[in-house]
Length: 208
Image (cartoon, rainbow, N blue to C red; front, side):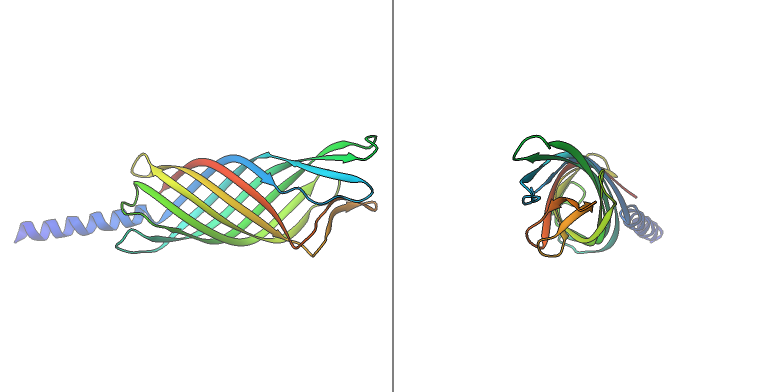
């Protein structure tokens, strides 16, 4: 009887420890960011947006799980990326290159499903928040935005995993907006209400 009680206590402690270790998770990733080209900037100018590097940091807080391996986490997400902009004119005399710094701060959730959690965990995430864009040629501007992501984690140790993720970021603008304007000149003109960016990242996670 004493042995059974000891085993029960040890089992409960092990279960509590495992839950505590899975309560929080920090993810750090890097990769490339891609942005859809805007429409013509007017006056015979066109913009090409080149892929840029990015840094992505997110924090997950465990919410609940189920017996089939599905788990739900709160997600706090931050991403920073650079967008290189090439502006060309019909005459070719006013061509120039500039850059755009983008920062995204979001909150949402991550849903994981796996038959063997902490071995191979595919997941889907959605967030909502704000995106701030800081061009070289004008002041910063902030807009409502949201993201959706698909990814997977490959656990190489008990608390360490390698990640791969594809994420789309949609920024909300007024229809046919001109943005990043200064001295009656606008860097980008958009047709529609959404400007899309895509991020492909690789990184690591640490759970505790």
